[in-house]
Image (cartoon, rainbow over the protein chains, first blue to last red):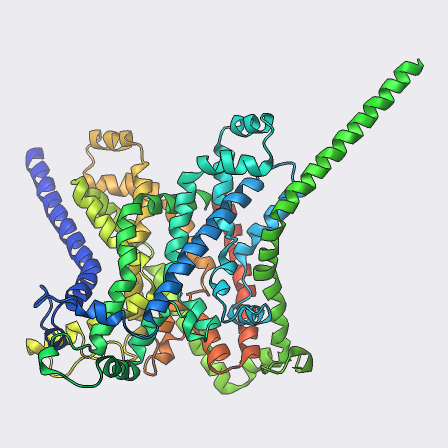
Length: 304
Length: 320
């Protein structure tokens, strides 16, 4: 009797296990397929892609789309802006997080607790987008590259992470440096910064992804086309089909060569190709640095 | 005698000197962080003064000092004007619906983590984890681009369905107001489910294996182990996430709804954050939008305070 029961349980478990794996395979496919679809369509013959027959495998592979898209007006510049804000923004945020995180462990600092709270409490309120817009206008930061970077330099959450990390380091490290006559700045650069690399890598990776993906700030603060980010440009490409078609005509001189139909740019081909260009850095970076991401969210949970 | 007195005076002097040096060092340390404090002041505190615009009839480019002070006009307008009231009612309904749906489905990442943990093959598990968290790291613009490629009238799904003659006319997935809330929820899940489960996966790996051992000795099957060991162990994490979600009840964020909005679905997609943007930047009613932001910020802070209080009372630990 008990034997039968045991068998029933295992068969039930087997069914559960199969269904479980099935669910995860399907959900994973749903997560991945759209990226795959964009990739195979961006490298297939454009007329076949437009006919909607490229669903599983690429056909008549060519890379003309990528070459053509890079010639689009504004795109190389937007790529430069996106790369620029990611690099500059990440460097500044990491330095500020590390420095402030370290400085707020310095008990001798004048009114340390007050200033720490002064910074950290900003996590819990914000003025709203219109007051922010007016502020940026007053500071002459609208239509400026620095609007992408400066408001994000001091991130209370990152500072808390670094501060907690520095506090967990052995006190003797700092004391030894002090005995050697190092100044606070020297101690920071020579002792603290090297020991903080794990936490700073996490901060860096989250900041970089945030900068790369940011879209709202361009939308609100920027009207100068030369400062558009890639994300914003992509958004425009999706929504302005007619002007995109005009751009396509311009880029090919309007003359439709039948032989070139496979590589003739269409609004769809441009959208998909630009999408891939925008997502590619994330797709490369993410699997490589996954452990940092995971660590990052865990630190967040510990703090929470 | 005299000598002893001198000694104590010297000692006092020395102490004072020391104290002064310490103060000087404290000030020096403070000066090092001043540049950063100025940034905080400029970008976090100074914008709060922008709230005064809510009490003026501010029409740029006319500067504030030449604008008319209107008192609580904008706040009154939200509830007095019938069309305005109706609109704000709809916006609040959308906001509450989206937040409520997200809270209602907040247990899904827990199930996801439990299910993923049941998969024995470690490599397979890692691959699934990596691939399902990828959508979390792309922007909403890219999500929309994907939605466009898949679901627009000439997109992949419609073309496929037409090619196999399931449908004659393309289904309008994006350009219609049908099931807007549900669609937004599903995109949210597509993007966030895998990532949301990571925290629970980590919590599961922290459970003492001896508990399972003991459970198995007592004759518990897999399901019972999950129900009586795994789920209770995940509850504290779940509770924190739930509390955070409640404190963010009014803040759905704007990006997702902004990229998906169009003339057809505007009625059901305009959540508070998007509405503030549309009113302020779209209609150029900066003062009304500021009044809305201000109310939202105040309510959010109160909400956070209450939630934190509840957390302290029930768990004995604050969430902030």
